[in-house]
Length: 416
Image 1 (spheres, rainbow, N blue to C red):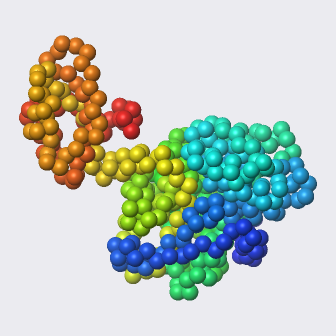
Image 2 (cartoon, helix red, strand yellow):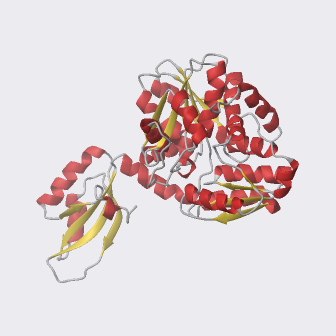
Image 3 (spheres, rainbow, N blue to C red):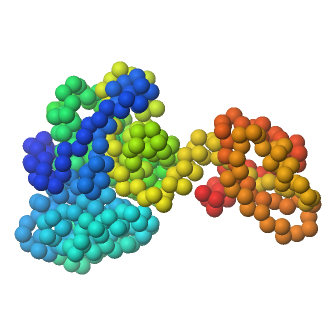
């Protein structure tokens, strides 16, 4: 019989994790409620001491180990948040842990993992993706007597994540119409399905993935747990090539809908949350709010919960987040501009070609020949997407236009 999270086991998990995981706030977002004409509630899983919900599943699983398993030590693989939950649990329970993380993991997450684990954990950076790290961690486990702590495809982890659902039902006594949950491997969504199928079956659970890593959406469409050959790793907390076998079975039958959101839109949500609400989230933590636009008509007048899954964001990524948001909003554009080889050409471009609200944000020029025109790569930020076409027309009319780079991914990747 296929595994399905049992409500009594989730309640046991809630008792287990109570010693390390506080009940996170459920807050009404006045701004988003007005935008969507609905009651939008934010479940602030970003406010755990490890700044994500992953402490729930990690601590519940590690607490269930036998004395022999604890003495032998544990191993895990994680893009960051599960690693911090495991590290905290190892330190709290005095268990030695080896934590594999992708080499591209933001520095902030690596440092936090070491800080939470202290002398009880060793961090190993391996591979470019979570899946690379996971394979290395499992190979290490096979050559030792240690226990592998899976970040999502484990009953005890799923039951730990399900405690989020118990808290929601305690915190909000009216019917919850919709819950939006980020999906990386599917552990959180699976735990929520276990709770709400039993205690609130009319609640619709919507899974949200990054557009560049649609592993659950692809698997549900194929009716088979499918490994993606390539993913966009930007939303590192939710970018996996293959979801769990357990979580796939639960989600394909238990989710009301499974959607993806463009990375650029997520970046704009991060900026909006920071600038308008003073809330700091990581990319995976902004997925759920980013999905609301697609359900604007459906959720009107409804009680809607968005789970903010984590806030482990590295400040050094801010420039890239802003860049991706501008590109998604069609406000940032890159061109090859062909400047005539005569004095005053650049002044003419700025004064007569650019619009009054256009701003040059990138300029790369190198004269390597005596040809009549010399190319430069120019990045221009616009005030409105509608300003693009007039800009292009002025460039062409005055013989400055060379090429448009935004829609040429092979070239564009070197700029962003």
